[in-house]
Length: 497
Image (cartoon, rainbow, N blue to C red; front, side):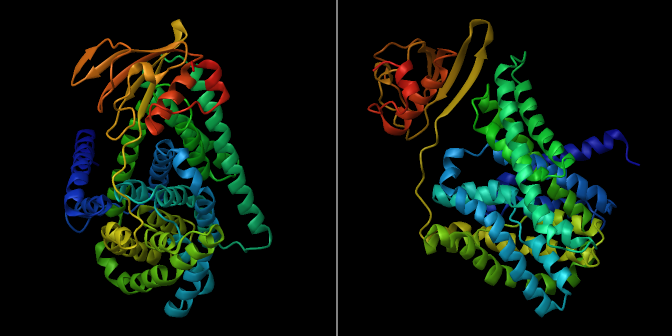
């Protein structure tokens, strides 16, 4: 058994390799998950000789990592960005999943000779897009906000119905007319549990007055994990609960919201690195040779038939343009999630579970190489890409509980319409004022004639009552310029004309 010093040293070295692999992957144009898998294979039995074949432990750690990845996705997703895509995203995560399972199941039954239950099980495992792959790859492609919102919402919410389908198909229990009702209950209950924990967590964190800034990110992530556990104990969908809870918390007025998101991103990267390395360590390369042909067959069925038909069934009622449908069909990224679900099938006792793990591993590597590296080109050819957009303004809040006030830290990004605005034109509500401007590393006390520039950092002191109106006003000017009007009665009542 390895000593504690050795185990910690190897873990730290793997994390550092994973961090630097991100930069290497950007230079080479390869998704970073492939490099993480390569690190795991390098450490494994066929190269450096580390023996690891515990499927149950791999499944448990994989699901734990998926919980953190979904939490990161929800906490860093802007509801305003995904709201226009809600209908299509949910349809892809439900109707699209059902169509994909059916098409892949029929195809593999006819082409590979699998019995019907095994064929549909394989279809279920392969129907889930990967949240980690989408969150880390898609945001750098530069597609329209609606398309990006659809894919992010789909990848964050389709794991829940897929894992239910995998468990049902992998077990020997008969599927009856009650099965759809059970699945419906688990999804609805999971969403409700996640929403309740998100709302309650946001309310508590706003009033907690924690003694250290670093406690807010920890508490926020703990609420998301607690939502998962509570939903699972209630026999509901824990994966949906954690994503919904994180989505609610990420869009609430939390103290130190910027720190919460940064911490969530770091934990998400750590979960991705650990998960992909673990899966690379678990797999046995000599067995993968026999999985190449079934993986090729499954991949062709998935890309040529299942994904396009699932997108058509989900997106057609919403009149999504054909170019966007084509891109959605190509951008159904697979990653570690199908491998984890294949392990779930193996643990549940599916007869083809071991072969399924190997086939999915080969398929994920192949599809990631093909899809992940060609997404920017496909987006340009289909004309769904967009020019570089100005970054959204960053507003972070820190409570001053003894004074019943808040500090807003505002960063003016490139392209913001705050550029060139005089402070007197900002027209903050009563109870709010800009107390400090940091420009080119130098801080100074501004006056009403101070004109804002790109990269400026502002420190806004506001009463607790005026905080929401002040933040809303800053965001309005950022998006619409100095002539931005008040958009709600609450702002009008708190502000100056």
